[in-house]
Every structure is written in structure tokens, then in C-alpha cells.
Length: 243
Length: 220
Figure: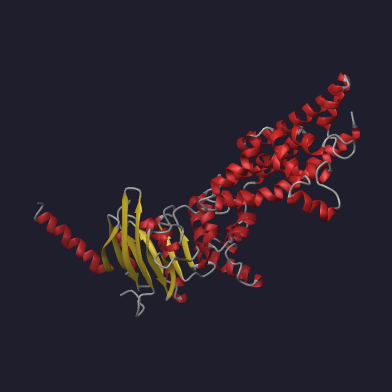
């Protein structure tokens, strides 16, 4: 079973009209590793961006570790940089004018400068990217850029990490290695992760909690085994009775 | 060529360009980062000198800085003389008149930066000042150069606003463009031709270098 906290550490109510699409996502997270699963266009990335504070929902609230990050009724909106949430997306968006080491140190402004070098070095070691420290992003492959973007997000040790398909450019074996290292690194620091994936088998492997999204709302939420069993039963019912 | 006017013009253009960069860089950053509803009002005001005849702008500045307004009287009370018909008055006029030439390239350069890069910096705790100094400016260096060159060359060639606010006082407010006007008035066409050719060549070379640099960068 995935490691869970007694109480949910995050509760979110996110209601918004996004063009022709209506998002109504109400959920809470208590597992250390939760996978957000669903086909393209169901609102997974919008949920992530709202949690990170990059877009505001029309209506809703977000509470993380007892702190209100957003409450549209009382007009509370905590800026992205003050939420303590790290967010890695499919696009690395590295700072092209800085070296890899400077990219990672960018978020360490509140860490004493004597410690910054060690922090950068250890996170690069973790992600098997230490030899890249002095390179500029333009000299990196897509997979290397994704690992540096992840390192940059992890270095400040946020309170929650959002991962929106951040390993799409990594080959399967490296992805598996990095995921396993990431899991134990986050686990040792008590940092939960919320991970967007199209691959439910991945969730099953990590024994994570799973949230399934469909048409802009949460269709199922539970352990990977339960959600998979539900999906299997639903498919079997449809096969048995196509009408 | 009128060397005094040349020196005064270069001094005016240098000071104006420095002041413009100091004002336009944070304003361009604000325009890109802000979601304020009244942003278009600031954008329209900042672009107004592009469309306004220089004499209209010069006239209103002459009135605003003159002894009939609180601004003009306040300045005179502090500095002991009015702002009109002084070098400082020329600087004020030039800054306003050349403002869009500094602001537009900077705002376009900042706006062209990938929003995902800005989001990443915000998520890592960058406040607006850090965002401007560590991300926007280094990534828009070329736009800053364009802004500086356009502001400088535009100030060098200024005539209407300078004449309205500063008049034609040798060594104080007589710039090269006013010197040409004087030379033509006095039928000294050869001298006017020399000065005009120098200004033409200067502007052309400045723009040529700018486009050359831009084309080199895009081919790189």
C-alpha cells in the first residue's frame, strides 16, 4: 500500500470555464505519490497549473498542509513562488543564458550561498547529470534538459512536487531508474508528488494512489489496484452488454 | 560644422538615452508581467509621441514647464530659473518625445520570451525585480541594444520639440538640427549640406549596424 498521511495534506476544489471546456475537479491527496490519470484534453494540465498558481480558477480553493493557497470567496491567492510547490512540465523551459549549475541554483536564493554549491552538486548526482554542470542548455539533449528541469525544481526542496509528464524524452530504462531514485529521494524528505501520466501500469508499479479524470471532473480516486479493478470491471460490463 | 552644436547634441542624446533606458526597462517589464486592466491606457500614452506632431508636444511641454503652471513655478522656485529654454528642459522634452522608440523594442523583446521560462522563474520564487534583471534583460539583450540605438539616433535628429522648448541659444539649446535650420535661413547651403550629410550618414550607419547584427544573430 502507498504511504499515507492520517489527514489529507492537500484539498482542492477547482471550478473553471476554459473556453468550451468546463473543469470541476474536487479532490484531496493523502498518499505520498498520487498519479493523475486520464486521456488528453480532460483537464489534467489545467489542474496542475491551478495548483501551482499559474492560472486562477473561476471558483475554488486550495489548502496545502493547513495553509490556504487559494480561496476565491475570500480573495486569497498566494503567488506561485510563495506556495512551496515545485512544478515540472514536459517542456523543460531552462534559462538558456545560464549554465546548468546556475539554472539549478536559481531557486536557491533563500539557501546560504556556502550551501548552494553542495545542493546543486548532490541533486545533479542524484539525476545522473553531474558532468553537465558547466554546460549551457542549448548543448543538452531533450532528455538531459528534462532531467535538469527536474533538478532545478527539486533543489529548493518544495513542500509538494507536481510532475506533468516530465520524462517524455527519456528512454525506458533511464526513466525507470530516475523514477525510482526520485521516489526514494522524495520519500526520505517527506515530500509528496502528484504525477500526470497516461500510463496506468506505471501507477500500478509504484503502488501509488490514482485519480482518474474524465471530461473535466474526477471519475475515480483510490489505490492503483482498486482503480484498475474498477476499470477492468467497467470494460467487462461493456463487453458483456455493449448497449 | 557647428562643433558646439555637435557636442550639445551628443550630450543630449547620451543623457536622454540613459534616462530612457532607466525608465523604459522597468516599464516594459511591467507591461509584459502585469495583468492590470488599465495597461492599454499606459501603452497608448507611451506611444502617443509616435503620432503627435512634435510642435503639438513641444507646445504643451512649453506651457506645462512655463511659469503659468504649478510644475513650472515649482521648478523655478527650487532651481531659481524656469525649465524652458535650458538644457535640462531639452532633456525632459527629448525623453518624452523619444520614449516610444525605447519602450517598443524592449516590450516586444520581453514579450517574445517563452512564457514557460517566465513561469519557471516565478515558480522558483523570482520577484518582479529578479525576473527583470536575471531573466528578461539577459534574454532580451538585442532588444535593449535596439532601444538604445533608436532612442539615441531619434534624439540626434529631433527638431520640433527642441525648438519649441529650448529655442535657439548657442551652447545651451542649439542642437545640430537647429543649426541646419539656421544655416538654411542664412542661405549657407554648403554648411547646411555638410551638417545634414553627417546626420544622414550617422543615422544610416547606426541602423545598418543594427540590422547587420540582427541578421548575423538570426543566421547563427
